[in-house]
Image: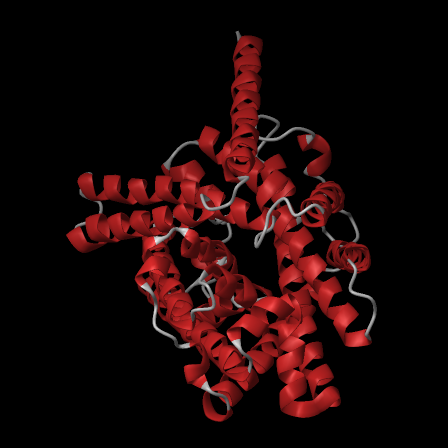
Length: 451
């Protein structure tokens, strides 16, 4: 068996995590965060810090598992190897049918929002969704036909996404009025539960950190470098996000940002640099959002294929989905399957926005929140490694899993603020239960067939 090449050092690992996490969320979720906190910038910063803390300890937990296996596959592999194959089947179905397609549909819609702004087109939901549909269709085609083309665009967009963040953050801190949104936090605001709804958008903004664990087998001295990277990267991301959040709130009144919603980025840039400068900034924002959508699709189209090669017992249509195209070596059938599911969720997202079924939220936020339930299972497995004597340090084996679990529960508490949370959560659980039923039935049939 060919040995895995360890060609990523600490610096590259850190930049890859930053590139995965920093995407579209911060651009179109800042208004949601301010709305949830009643326009309070300090409270928004506080929730950012709490969200980052949960991710730091979560990353440390996951890295304990990542350093103990050379198998690729990230979270699904860790669930399969340290929990159970049946549970891995459930998580795989959740990611294929809910997690990835909802995020792909929502981020593609955001591409439509900013393209309408850039060209001055009518920003109707229908126009935004149509542009989003055309974009993710192109993205699926591009990534299905050429891995190099999709990867190249991803690298380019990673650099592009930092430019508007840095410009707005610096201009806001030096030329804006940082005291504008720094009114005191009233006890009634903290005492109520409304501000907890800011957790959903913040979880969205930080989402993607766990994907970085899939490169663990390729990191030099991963037992040391991956934990370091999973501390350093979230801190850099937190600083970037907080600087942008304060910067944009310094340049535009928080209540105005809430009123303008996703268009606030363009207005801020227009106030700073005029019409032409605003368009340049907006182009970089669009590239950043496109890069996020491309990265999601890039990983998503391989997921049904990854499940299918594990056998018919993990996923239906395994024989067809496990095939790769002879010319480019890409899992085209898997990509088509993912495209169909994404289109379904794009339609659901259209309905929820059209009729205001998820105010100050969207279909992707709850699926992100629900994914933390699987993370809690893995955090517990780290604790069991400590009890078995495989982890010697009480800090790594007890304190870190406990803090990571508390962080996940904090994220889950934010999801509870959505009025449709329980309905949506029930659907997510139903998908997992169907996967477990499928797994059990198929393996029972196999058992009967071998007798």
